[in-house]
Length: 297
Image (tube, rainbow, N blue to C red; front, side, top):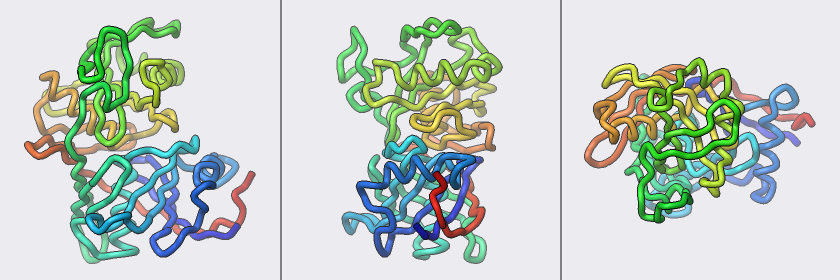
């Protein structure tokens, strides 16, 4: 197998980008298995996921974004991934700004800050959040599919945190947001037990399609700090949709204002909530171009 690809990252969230705009490089039925193989660190290229750049399915979009996690599952959307994608498309495929992007989670619009021909920052319209349980999806006793779950309690089975207060929202993909101060824990506790607690919540029976999990500390009305456990990837240094979700929930619960700077292990993201929806602002980096000779294992 010989295939050209580009390695990119946004806040340390790293991706293998494959250009299928002019034709298929990986067969549709093999994409999941391919992602699982090529993302394995130490054995192959290694990444949090694989992004495919494709032609859109209708004229209302400029380009189609698809992303597969390191476990082979296809995600609806990815905030850090779409910034990498947008930079790649502008610099390598089409000089279109703003860019109307087709995702499994719906339309996303990327506006790019350009210097010369290089994309320096990307502002992404993340759409309008959904809170109803049917949109997550989430199934929990005592709640209907049209209810919201805000700072509700779930029972857990791990020995470190027997129950957790969390809120859920869909911003193109589903997220559970946990404020450490509402659960009597701190971020050091989260780091120590993330592999256990994050994984349990991701796979909790309340979430039939699993869920992304974020532990948030509110620093002040304009700043938060986040530790992320991503569905299908585990711990990551940052999550763009997760940051968006965290700010949306913090604002909805009255913990922050509508414009928030979020600190993640990989760096910072700006999120702004407006009347028409939510916007995410951050950068992305092209690390190298390469040719895959052998998937490695």
